[in-house]
Image 1: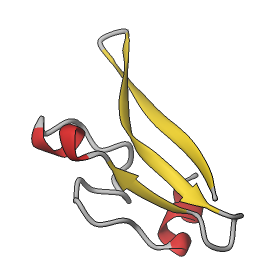
Image 2: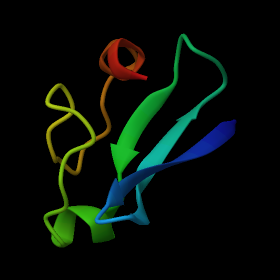
Image 3: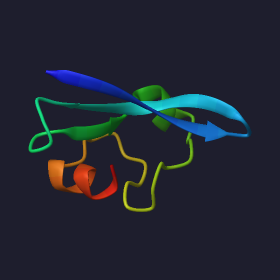
Image 4: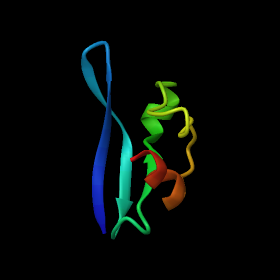
Length: 64
């Protein structure tokens, strides 16, 4: 399984927001980290609101 860290820039500082995990584009899912959700960080996209559950491959592919 492959893993990619997703960061967001806030006030000039890169902050880890979550990870995309999967074997390829057809099953890659984005999930915010627990720490990022607890801090109520800004969502990386309007289409990916803050939530603890992983987004589906379709939702992930639509943004990333």
